[in-house]
Image 1: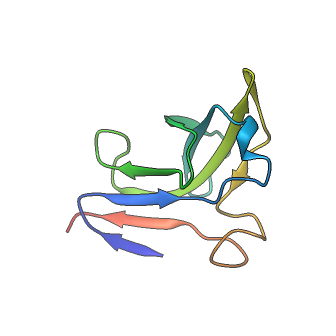
Image 2: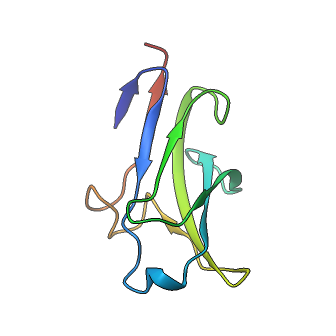
Length: 98
């Protein structure tokens, strides 16, 4: 997926038991690399989103992951490359200047 803009919005569906979730940790990594880097923490809500600007990431090709946090415990990552990600079979983002 390609985006040529100053910012973009990541959105995800909360899990069925979202009432237990306090926040979400959002991670990113350059495409093809192993190590995830923390991008931001988002408070739990009905439709969790994060607007990404260059204050959070540089232009480049990125994969993303989200982990739910409940009672101080972080869940496993749900990544943009997971088979059940939307769009199906996973995705990564090529982000460039407008």
